[in-house]
Image 1 (cartoon, rainbow, N blue to C red):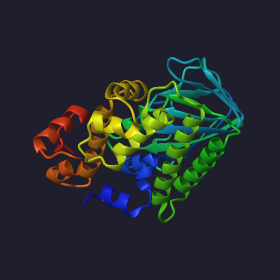
Image 2: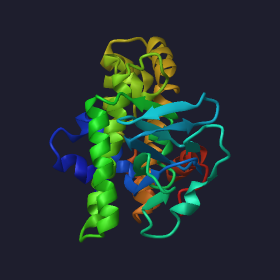
Image 3: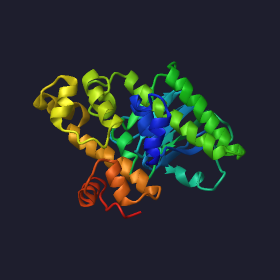
Amino acid sequence: MLEWLDLCRDRPNFMNDTFSDVLTVLGTSSVRGTSLEAGGAWSLSFDGRERLKFVAVLKGQCWLVVADRAPEALNEGDVILLSDTSYTVASDPGLEPSDGMELYASPGHNTVRIGEHCDTVMIGGGSGFAAGCGSFVLDALPRFLKIPPRSSSARSIASTLAALKDEADAERLGGGLVAARLADILVVEAIRAYVATHPEDKVSWISALADPRLAKVIRLIHEDVARRWTIEALAREVGMSRSALTLHFSRRVGRPPLDYLTRWRMILAQRELALGRGVAEVAAAVGYASQSAFAHAFKRTMGHTPRRR
């Protein structure tokens, strides 16, 4: 049986926790822990990648600039979440930025110092995902989220970033494993922080979990992904009509229930194919009796055939 199914069996109530389910499958990995100590006039730009990025201001203040948003003032204690977007941090939002990525390009160069006197100290890091899997989480989160500085999530993220930076600097035995687990913590805290903002009016599977009936539909899909689910069967489980479930799910999640099922099946399949499983084995495990039907669904969803690596 496939690895992710084994994991679900071995951990009690594992599949009742959708977040744990998602994290296990998406292959969460750490984005290098870094810090910035700056004074005077400075401005650094960073590109957008398929990852969650976290920044905590430990001292002083600065500005964050994200496209299509007014510049955001950041003060000591602030923690921000950035989802798959380019951004600039600066002492003054009107300054022309230089390439921040270049300053951290050298391996082991995790701290950048600008100016003679340090007015601002920031620490950053984040979580990446297995190739092609990140959008499942990133599309469900806002591009920018400022986390209240006194919240438990802000404190947890700041301490986790510090630990991630420490692991990056120390290069201790088992550091890669520790960093991966810290990346998991960052993703969980990001989701908790987002849910705490009460995003009931937002369209995503994460915000839909606030609705008990939709949460049950999502849980049922994750519990038994290989089942030949129909709208009738899912609607019956939650006491809704087919049309009401389809409409309500589509409005809150952004796609109909069976589209969500297909998307999750293909995320699972891509993960297992990357681990070297055969196409026929993976197709059967995610509910396809026909290899050709699986290949068609995979290409339509992921943009390439299941044999491509």
